[in-house]
Length: 455
Image (tube, rainbow, N blue to C red):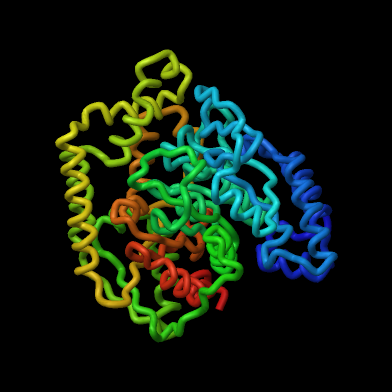
């Protein structure tokens, strides 16, 4: 952006806008121009130029007259192309929906507009949000913003959202997370990604994948930014989450599943962050969590919850001509849901509630979980396009660590903690139980600089 560092945070932009040093209209114009001129045109599925300029003009008028709506007035935001924005078609990363333009905004789109934010565009994703890699054959695949050698995966399914922020095109983008779709692209692109507890925000006006698992959250540059966006999405007038004393922070590192087949560079970056936290007084324990293994045993016996619900959602499309126009890998994965019987589905749901209760019993009061967001850094795209077997194997591995949190109905924040192979970013995942969002965000805010290695 002309005169504005593309890596500046929401909070940093807010200071400039509120002081009058930066005009919202100039910022919106510069943002749209930078997106249109950026070398990778697969990040966005469409821009909202007319809307953005109108919202920016209104924000500028309010700031000049002393009637600012708050900290987020004039801040650009991008939306994963699952969120309805009035007057535009929600594609869900597909070409088969044939939807008419939305007649209203999704509830959270309206909430951020009411906070003064400026919607600038719709970001690309894995088709129907059903992959952790971020590859899309219809709108192109956004390239990881941090790669300096070969094109690497952006992570999915909120692929464009992660790359847009990491590339400095927007300070924040909103994504969805059903099995890791916010935390994965955040980790792979070296930014912050917050997945809220399911139900923390309204889901009205958002194209679903699996309603028992779908959740929302921001991809941004700092935990503070995530806290500000969280407040606005809940229609709070100001954020109400502060820091906690690091000496009161208790972390437990699971020793089950999450470190299986993890790259050495990922382990090294994660453990270095843990060492920094321990030196600052954070209490760290390590324990086995057999319930993590039980989740994957359950899926092996009965199938995956996400697959069952995605199949029901797309059953008619898969039985008709639309299937030939969909990503074959999405079709193949979704059709696995046909094998999941009603008895299997009920067994999964029953076991889920039992395992959520088991997690609560396994954690000591006040403990949060910490482990690498992913077992690997972003791999090159080309081999995945050439080999379906490799694609499916890597997709499962990519989703493994993060999907545990979705199944157990919790919340999580991925924070950059260093680099691994090829100098690519590594993510540190802090996770809490269901509805522990405030405690999680407070802890993440307090620990962020140590996790990054900035302190």
